[in-house]
Image (cartoon, rainbow, N blue to C red; front, side, top):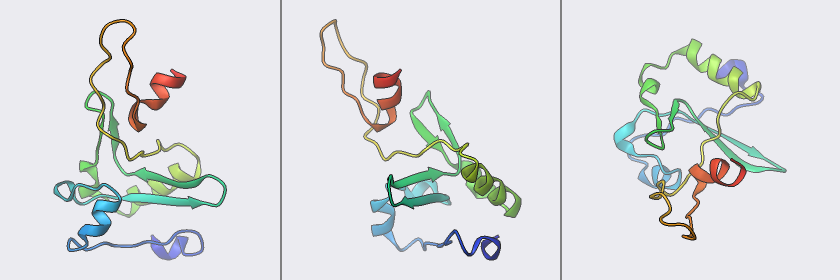
Amino acid sequence: VAPAHREKIKFVLVGEDQQALYDFFKIDTRQLPQLLFIDIHPEVGQRQFKYGEWDAGRGEWDTSRAARLDAGALEGFIGDYSAGRLRRYLRSEPRPAPAGPDGAVEQVVGSTFEATIRG
């Protein structure tokens, strides 16, 4: 897959001993393997996309299917990225408890921003 996308995408494999990188990208090493697509855009900044499913009920990504990743699935992920169909991965604080009584201040974090502010 990598040679076919050589001009546009850089593929990097990170060993289990690179804890500083995992910490920087907020990757839990107990959930390896993972695929993280990082787009460094000159106007928008860094955008990240994870291979997996967003679990809205738990408020976190389920990346378990990365353990079964093959060339066809990777091509599909790249195609979904190119077509703008991927949900952006946001490094976020955990989802806060619901706001209390009327007039209480509601805490907004990265994973709740869209639903709370633009909702």
